[in-house]
Amino acid sequence: MDSQQRSPADESQAEYKISSSYNHVRHDTLALILAGGRGSRLHQLTGWRAKPAVPFGGKFRIIDFPLSNCVNSGVRRIGVVTQYKAQSLIRHIQHGWSFLDGRFKEFVELLPAQQRTADETWYQGTADAVFQNVDIMQRHDAKYVLILGGDHIYKMDYSKLLAEHIEKQADMTVACLEVPLEDAKAFGVMGVNDAWQVTTFAEKPANPAAIPGQPDKALASMGIYVFNARFLYEQLIRDHQTQDSSHDFGKDIIPYLVPRYRVFAHRFQSSCVNMASGIPYWRDVGTIDAYWEANIDLVGVTPQLNLYDADWPIWTHQEQLPPAKFVFDDDNRRGQALDSSVSGGCIISGATVRRSLLFSNVKVNSFSSIEDSVILPDVVIGRHAQLRRVVVEKKCKIPEGLTAGFDPEADRKQFHVTERGITLITPEMLGQQIHKV
Image 1 (tube, rainbow, N blue to C red):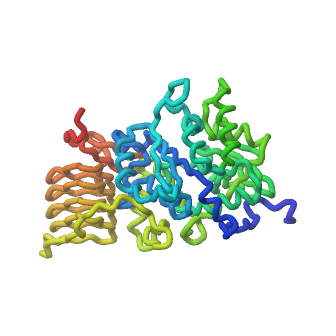
Image 2: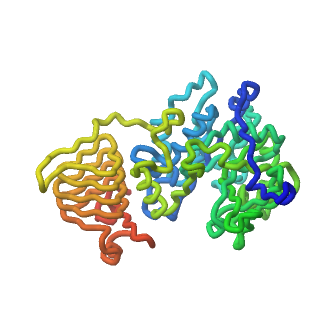
Image 3: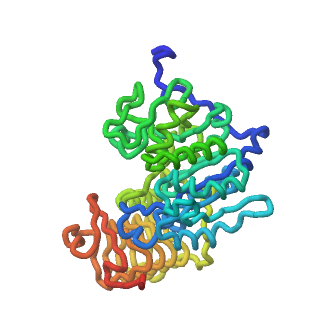
């Protein structure tokens, strides 16, 4: 196959890095994280919090990943757009992300829905959420705007994305990844030419177009965009004045821009940090099954997501907690955790934990068994409980002798059970009223 026939997916992509001549770019960039999503497919896990505030990985929240990517990439002027049940998210950012120094124009600024425009409406779509904050963005006098979702797990060097955007003299750049064709219906799907300029874009198409030469894969938008700031403001105003628009980047903005302006695709492989076996890690933990799987993967010997990388740390609110403790060493009452991750403040008292991830301050009492499970913070598990393949919500008090995760039909009478047989347990399902109205 000659160069004229070669698929863009087969072309080697240049490694773009911020050189000394580009150092100013990071300081001229404003990042905007869209963190107002409800995440309804997570069911009761988002009953009292927005999806970006859902705990992940033993001590983090989902939003810590795009925030950490910004800080590690040198992009330290950040706005977080909130809307749905944002109090947990706001409190987390206030406690964990106040270390940036305003004297050097570094900040994480919260942007709740305030009906700031003349229409006095709540955010109508992703583009409208940005439009309603244009006046705030303009005050920061940025040259580039980096727009991010707040609800995905990945590690990415945004400086490489910014450098490529500038090198190609793009009006807009869309980060993309290759996904199986059958999964592409949930994404915006792009077609590109040999220069990686976007030639077609379809939001959640019924019949996604395959990558030339790779009939089983499609090129999908990650919902990560770079705009020249002035160009973005112009397009947001134009879209706001378009009556039949749903004011969404994927449905309205990108399809309008592709045939008219310089829109380029950026391959995630070029900027992903800590790729495992050359495969970039990106997860949408938007379902209970995906959430459970991504957390359980972390307890493996060599997980695909490296949380132990000192060069690209994931920052978060660090509670001052005592170390985890394991007590009792009798034959029938031994406190132990095998192939598991146990966070600070946990006490495993004469119980066995296998292939599980325990968040902070979990107490597991004697003669209990926890297997293949994700236990969120401040959970107390009573004696003789048997849990397998469960996700236990924060502050649950598991009754003594409770068995869950072994009989899906029995579990469905009290708990939520997924198609893959993962059982979600919340305080309300146990008759415990944690949230009082």
